[in-house]
Length: 160
Image 1 (cartoon, helix red, strand yellow):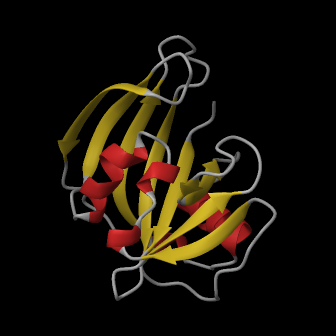
Image 2 (spheres, helix red, strand yellow):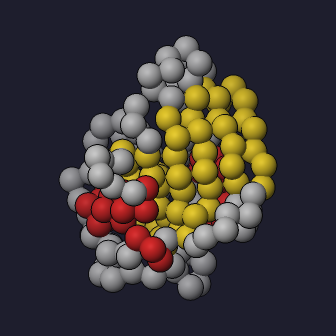
């Protein structure tokens, strides 16, 4: 699988914008906005493009704040394994709108629907929302959904 980006818009009041997947892999789950990198893109450009395509927000790639550098590993099917870079967007233009892929909704930190998210997100997302910058690996069972192990360490990303 190609490497992916993931963006979580954060409002000044602490609310997080998530999107409920309307089709494809992860149907019905709440997630950040993102997808696979395309030829010629930087990961930040990928993240900004996916954010716009999936919910209509326009963010400058250089304004995205790197929050995590993760590797999603499924030992039973290495073709599925991929790197994923997670960003926060704190500034953007436009208002969230539904797309054919995602239905956006703001959540307070206390309201985050972890029970309707990927199992892995329940592990690493609270850490990055608390301000930790992470690098690590998430290992998945053969079903590609359940987490069998994780390895994380805090790192000082030298960039936004």
